[in-house]
Length: 387
Ligand code: 9MR
Image (cartoon, rainbow, N blue to C red; front, side):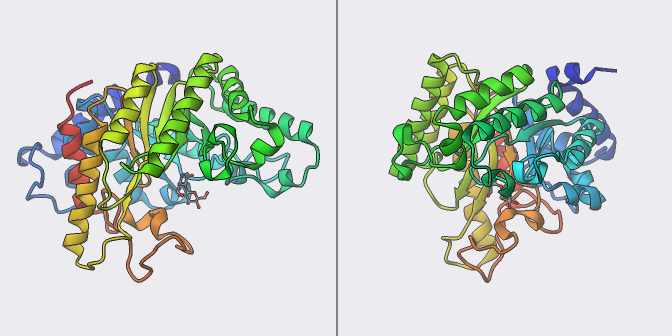
């Protein structure tokens, strides 16, 4: 039996071989697993084991996984099965954010993420943490404190407590999420946020240093969006993030990885920009994770489902063709696994620009049947040369 630390160190190897062995029995007599659209697929259960995203990713030096909303995993056993068959890594969508984890100064709500960690362990999956610091998840109780020293102490104590709770267990942490916004016109393109205002402009360094001390094993990650496209806005953000990370490295701040969220827009151009961005981090010795992949098709005018799905899948393929050849890329996570649970159709869906139709951004549809995105992902893994 491997210890938790050994398991993490061993990556998904064990996980995939177990899943593959189980799948081999299930699939005995089935058609060639390399076929893109196997005719025999009648349910997600036909895609377990060696046909899964997890197994195909693993064959090409990648870990595939998904974000999850924990109460759904607890209630829906079919979905829990789907996750365990397809994913080598999970990340809670919300439950490790300050607002969920820290409802009051004296309460740490570790129950749900602890459940997910145990679920991941039982199913030979890794888990990553999202996130320790984000401008959008700041509890009301801390906003009411009128003393910057006290807020800074709470910031350090929170990161320390949470990282220690999971020390040696999580593969990686999104230590700081979305800290760059050039529209705020602050030095370095930093976003004006509660943490910037109260902890100070060096809050990012402090967060990474504190996390490293509390959990020396987790890969410490800076995670952001709006850096994926071949357009001027994304190019500006890429340059600012690169400068920020170079500065961190030159100051000896412990950073191990970059998370490229990868919330894509169907039909937009993805290619050289993201490829060069990844290569710059590769040169710096950092790992790169595609952390929140999905494709909204707000801009697609036609309502024809097959046509919409084809554009969405093509967007996956073009983006992954640009990103995956770089050996720095170690993980691909979609932001949920099924269209039934995507944030793009979420409560209030104020961001959905075509309110009369549901988004279809993920590898499994609302009935857990594989979508064109599933095959686009799997084929993209297969086209990657092993890192
Ligand atoms: O998917 C998440 C949604 O359920 C939450 O309501 C929202 C606010 O906490 O955050 C969503 O996840 C975001 C992630 O934490 C950071 N990148 C963008 C994601 C989608 O908004």
